[in-house]
Image 1: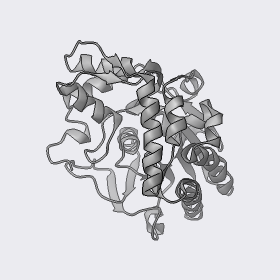
Image 2: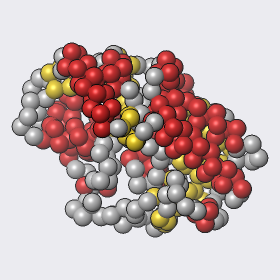
Image 3: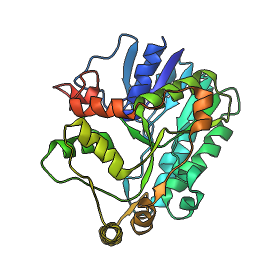
Image 4: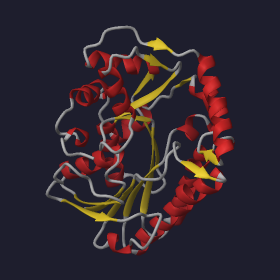
Length: 322
C-alpha cells in the first residue's frame, strides 16, 4: 500500500512511518518542515505542506491509504475564542482533508483523536480540545461515505522519542532525571502507551479495520510519580520522587487562567477546571483494543530506556537534529 502520513515528523506519526516501512508499505510524509538530522528510509518520501493552509491535492497522487496524526493538541493557545479555533482546526479541517482523500481515490484511513472524551465524557462540556476531539470522530466518519474505509484511534498518553523541535513528555522527563534537580511529579495518574505499540495498533487498523471502528489504545495505568520513577531508574537515579501538593497545582491552574484572560488568549483545556481533573487517577482498561489489534504491551520500560540512553535509532538523538 502507498500511505500518506499527515504529521509524519511528530512522535506518533514518525513511529507509524517506521512501522509501515517494517511491513513493506511505501510512505509519503506530509508536514510543514522536513525532518533534519536523519536519513529517511528508502521507501519514504517527503512533501512539504500544511493541511490547514493551501492546496495539498498533489500529495494524494497514487495514494491508497492515509494516516492522520497531526491536529493541534491541548497545549495550543488561540487568540480569541478557543471553541472556534478547535472547531476549525480539529473538526472542519480534517473533514475537508478526508473528503479530498476520498475524491483522490484513497480507500483506507486512520484518524487519531484522544482518549479523554471516551473515558471522561464530562470533559466535553468544559474543554474546547476535548469537545473537538469527540465531535471530530463522527464528522470525519460521516464525511467518508463513498468508499474510504476510516477507523478511529483514541490513544492514551504516548511515551516515546520525537524530533528535537517537539516538546514531548519523554524529552522533558529525560532532561529532568539527567539534571541534579530533586524530582517532583503531580499527584494522580493515567494510562500510558509506548509509541512503538501505538504505531503497531495504528498500522494494523489501517490494514484491516472496518469503517467506523474505534479503538481505545493504551497499556499501563501508572501514577505520575511511578512514571517519573521509571525514568529516574533508567538514568541511574534511585532517590524518591516527591508528589507536588494538589493545592499548588490548583493555584497554578487558577493563576494560568487569569493570565491567559489578561493576555487575550484561550486554552484548549480550561486551566482552573483541568487542574482539578488532572490530579485524579484517570485509568481505563485497554484490553478490548489489544485483543483486536494485537499490539505489543509491556514496552514502556524499554522505550524509556531508549529515550534516556539516547538510542541512535531514535530521531531526537542524532547530532544534527533541530
